[in-house]
Length: 250
Image (cartoon, rainbow, N blue to C red; front, side, top):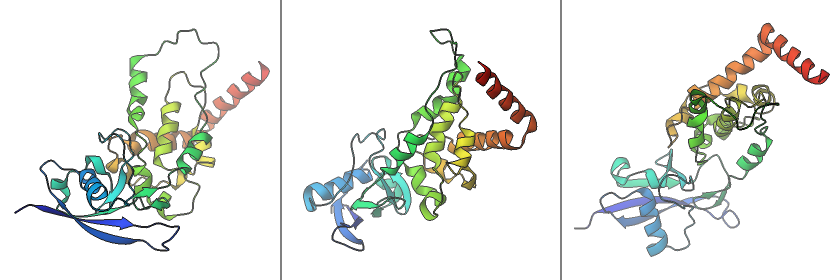
């Protein structure tokens, strides 16, 4: 007898449906199958109106983000044999639904445009010379695939009306702040504009990261510490003030 998978897939077209619903489908199981395989089977062979977003099927594009049995995951990286044969697939709850499993994540591009760009220090000899240990410090953050699962799982982003940018964007800012020849301190900006103080360090964001970036340990906490230093450490404030005066004189 052919082994089956039961999928409960969220369906909604906001232009027509005020509320969403779950629709049940049965899909044949194949060894090594991932959730994306099952959802694509539904779209291709059972209901072609199902809207999904995917691209590489290699966990590198971040397109197929969804909530699988209530947990933010990449559909292409989630094996059926790890989550069971009765699976609920929902769109990311932190974002408005465009249709079915497709959500509108465009607000993230608006946030990214606000983060101060890479600004190299003045009077540097070219080509730039950078120590390997400095390269490796921020290299971890370059692995971000912008799947926004960390944004989805963050209860501050998802459930509260705050100015908090969210973990994905703190990672971006931290990668620039840790560049050895960058001249901009983004920690004060993140605190005043990006709502950095709203993060209560639950580490749920790094738990769901498919690239295993230590978002809280290596990015958020570092930026919080810098913010505290620049706000409350009198010596750090004095150094920053003196550097500002030097630039204004020049």
